[in-house]
Image (cartoon, rainbow, N blue to C red; front, side):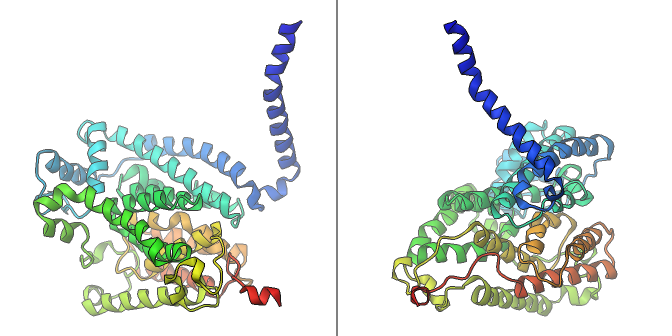
Length: 438
């Protein structure tokens, strides 16, 4: 009798859990019309999509031909390091010199050994498939915490994008590696793990410098939360990690390492551009054009920082003060404040990039639903937002790019940027205490 009671006691929690799960599923079925519209169902829809993605990604790997672009070059570059070459000016592959920071070398060195010196392409594809699923999980966790995007949009972010599947498992670019670290960093920031978040952000930068497009937003958040003095240790983590990772190369040839891995003036080939095809090639390559884009980029960033991100009523220089000494007491940074600032910072950089190549699509692809739905302007309906997503996808799938496809991409970017500027903020404006009392 006692044994029977003990058995029932052990089964009790599992039974209750199963009952709660069943009740939740029945409730979801009863509200199935809201299932695709209410952000509170993000995790349920995300679980279904992730399961579907396992099958889709497996099908793509085994049914669609792999295309060699940069993988052999990556392997040749890291093989040079394995053979004892630490001078960055002497490291190169079939497509040119090594132009990525040290984190790229270490990660792809691991892939070099895991794939039989880069020869086992199928193994590499399966590793990148896992990387793709990990990216989706991290992105869904972000969207679950912000509760701004209706779940039906996630179908277009997952199963419907041929180009993103291709970048991950058919091309094996390094951009997805950088982005999975970036999304891990965002999740850590949302969990208020600022030091670890900065550490992962720096790791992402060490794989590909493009992640620096998020840096203005991160700097603004650090100053908002900690002030200048409190932000310096977090920035120090980013800097020290870069030095530690690059130390073997810095000791050998510091100028060569810095000039190659953080080359801000690198020229891009006109034939690969996705966003500026409608321009004459001479103008595309002209330094004055590059300077104009940089000026526009910095100007728009400053305008957003002054008018959209900073909403306390104090001057922007108040961010340099210790939070306890500001006139308006700081409010906790909400998930939407963090995500909106980071994603907008990156998107502004995308809009004014000197060139976008096909693999660069993953720099902002997973952020587009948030940018379109988090600040809902009345004039931009669900249908129009889906049209913008569709045109962007079509532009990135047009190969080679045309004047029409690149112009359409800029038009879509302009619509999103206009909505981010004119739409209501996804986070509330801070109200001074005196006004609250009044």
